[in-house]
Amino acid sequence: MRALRLAVRLPSARVALAVLGVVVVLMAVGEWLAPYDPLHQDTTAILAGPSAEHWLGTDYVGRDVLSRLLAGSRLSVIAAAEAVGLGLLLGVLPGLASVYLGRVFEWLSLRVMDGLMALPFIIFAIAVAALLGNGLHQAMFAVGVLLAPTFYRVTRAAAGGLRQAQYVEAATLFGATRWRIVRTHVWQKVLPTVVVTTATAMAGALLVVSSLTFLGIGVQPPAPTWGGMLASDLGYLSQRPFGPLAPALLIIVTVAALNALADAITVDPATSTKEAHDAVRR
Image 1 (cartoon, rainbow, N blue to C red):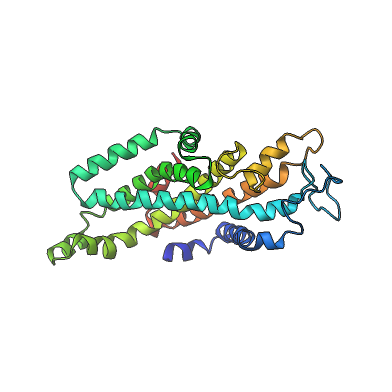
Image 2: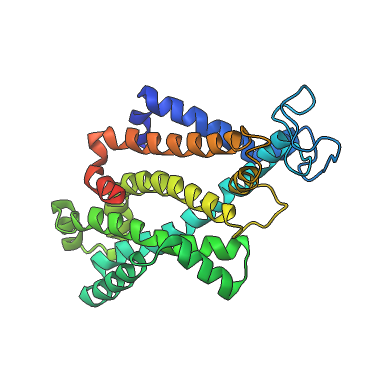
């Protein structure tokens, strides 16, 4: 995509892509790179500090922190990606349809999205977990549903400005169907907006997923996740004050890289997504 190619020329975008590349590698092969079994408990080295044997020390039951960080990358990132994918599906398609399927569908979709926007992420996720069971997919379903209005708003805003474009009207006069107009003429203009929104939503979803696992919702112990490790380390600050540093840094750096990439793409005027991106941030 032209917007992404132009964004890569910016130093901030190159740094962000490098960081995200490392995160993807950790997600793909982190479990195999772990020096120890992330679930193995060494009762002789509980709350141990960094050493040649355990580079980042051990936790409150003697598990190697580095191994758990590496192994937990997959669940943490996949959970956020699952929520964003669901939000993308539930937001982009109705956003496009609301522009081209008439006022009735537009009114109904707007009312649904307005209702979803009023729901708080954490409380809704807890309610869904109580109703459907405390599991990863149930929690990510809740997060994905509440991400849908973000995708809906920016997609509808980007597509609405193209409805009366001259080339769209010309295609209609030549007999092009609505599906062909959306697929050929509209989607290419909307796609940069969706890319920026996806990067921003991924950053937000990662924070929400970390918050949920911090509260014990979604991924259950002893499965390692960044948020879960952060929660367990906070209980032993007096014995291991540097414990939360590693998982917190991973979360912060990943979120910052996603936001930096989204900002770099927005800088390109050819994307025409600045207004939509600002709407997402608000």
